[in-house]
Image (cartoon, rainbow, N blue to C red; front, side, top):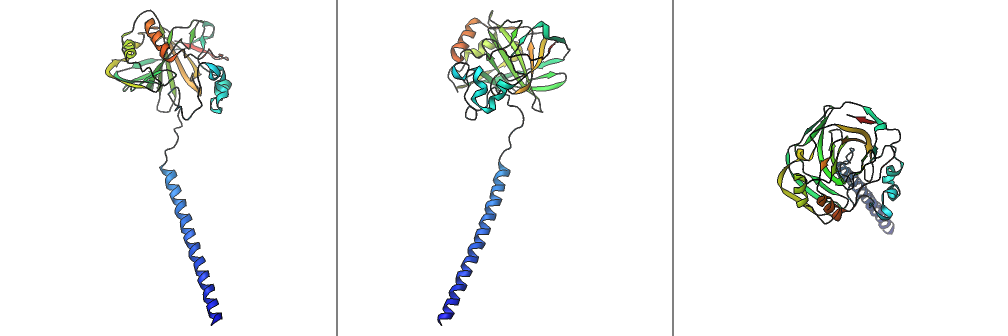
Length: 283
């Protein structure tokens, strides 16, 4: 009887371990398939370049135009910013006659009136919601994603800086970035800019939707003659492969508007970068 009880106990223990192993296998299997489902549901990273001058502040190291985080230190702030220091095709540049080459490009603006949305991101005033606006460069279409401002100008022409520069950031379907730079001289008020300035968000992170439709073509010179070169974003991560178009004719801005921008944002121009053998196309 004692031997029978011992045998029964062994069989029960064996059966218990078999059940436990079965449940473990089922649990591991369910966990595996659950993880696969989660991975399949997660969005993939966009391989194209970000058209905003900065990606989310929470995802990237902080940088600035002054102090220990100024442009000369950007490359040391994060490994993601190494191109700011090690890149060979950086922006902005000084455009001089000695580096010009004749090159005819077909540049056509298709800008509609649009409602606009302003944000103070701490580094500039950025304007978006520019629906239906695009530019054609050599028959390739680039949609306008946003535009923003720098003071003083980042690019120089023959060593001359302007009080302000506007960057119109475009992107084609393949993700290629085209930035059109417009120099602004402080000699007269410009109606569309004056309207934008009435709604300027003066606190970092503040956003304002302008309850008006504005014609962006009024902010552009009538002539499309320009300089063109291959460069980079002018803020971290300083990604290269950006096509730059710098319009030759400047537009207008009131000195009062320049002063108000600087009071809110401060001076936000990256210093001139070495040309390193690049040619500048002249159209």
